[in-house]
Length: 316
Image (tube, rainbow, N blue to C red; front, side):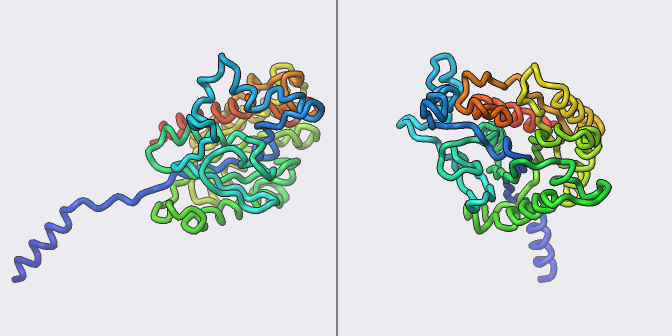
């Protein structure tokens, strides 16, 4: 009898354990350009330049139709993915659901941010379902608002709020996304797209590189993910002809990535080549928001997504 019991235990031990299902979690953080300012369908001739540069306009261009075909169903409706989800706490409440247009700080579904194409890129690459946690506020600096916890003077209020929002979102996965209730969250990447406010302050510019290095270190510590892949999106609004202040932030961003340890765990993604002329965009007075050009936000998300995939795969 004892031999039979032991044999049963050995047989059970030999059976393969069922793998715990995971959901790949990516954090998209920054200020208003991470919130999302790309115009989808607003085309008022005075307020939106007649629809130039909006998503519907760029999608209709014959030479670019293939690039955007995955955004709509054969019936012409916006695709809502059932394997990629977005969670974004805004002043209007928590936006949550399958990836589609509209996950920005605005009400309605008239805007996009980098999350749209970023989500499609990572969703197509990974077998696991994906959750994008957006945490972003307009008009905030790294020097003061997002100041890292380990920087002189201590954490800025929006650094602390960012950490709280991420932690709250992770805890709420099973209730906010029932289809993911049995999935263990796998923190897979942190994407930072910010810098505008820092470029106007001399001290903020001078300290940006160091503060960005400390941000990466503190984020990893506070989220208990010591090798979390870090992706830094370039402050690219000004395009190739940016002013000296913007160039200073870009250089600081690139230099910080080299210093983030372990070596090779962070990457800098150029975005200035995605800037479009104001004459070809809906918000001609909003250079700080890429003039609201949807193509810019789509291409930024595409570049950030591809860089993230490459970085995650390298670390596997």
